[in-house]
Image (cartoon, rainbow, N blue to C red):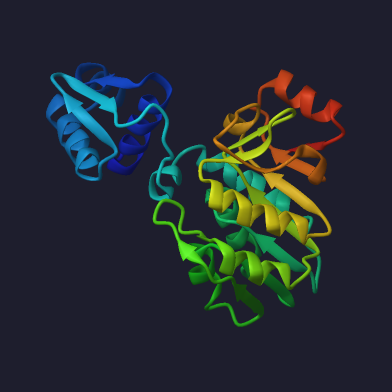
Length: 252
């Protein structure tokens, strides 16, 4: 396991259990305890955990993983979802993309298409598509968040309010039949909700680990979404609840 994957795994275990042990991590990752300690030091320097004697604890009860650490989580599932999502896109469409690792994979899957207009509030997506001459790219204004690279706030909301998208792919941190589509940050949630409101067809893209989960801030209710595109690892009971609410669920 490379360093990036180890750091992501440490943060994921902290999010789930609140603490980690150096010895347990060394055995799980197949590396020395000295390597694990260096990993924990690197994460502490980014203020993502607090080291303790023999391990580390989460800096908060619940927190959002920075995008650079999310990238290696469920990577294959996200690529499959992106490939399936790209099949929904036809020539001359205007496509909305929120930020997120799955929507980033969708942007990459669409990068060689011609005649598309892509609207995004994600700086990392914009930087990848800006060099594609056959794609018309529109980037919202707004305040950037270093955690997600997303632009959000009133300026972004106003930008999105003035256009209409044929199809929007919405990244989430949780999707649940009762709680709806959720993410960690309320201002970002509101901006993504504006994209939902101004799209003719809305597809939530989420790997199975996010299905049935609820994060802090609501983006929209399930009734505002047309489809969920996920993978087979999603909790069957959560999927059934979503389907029973009238949402079409596709598996990649």
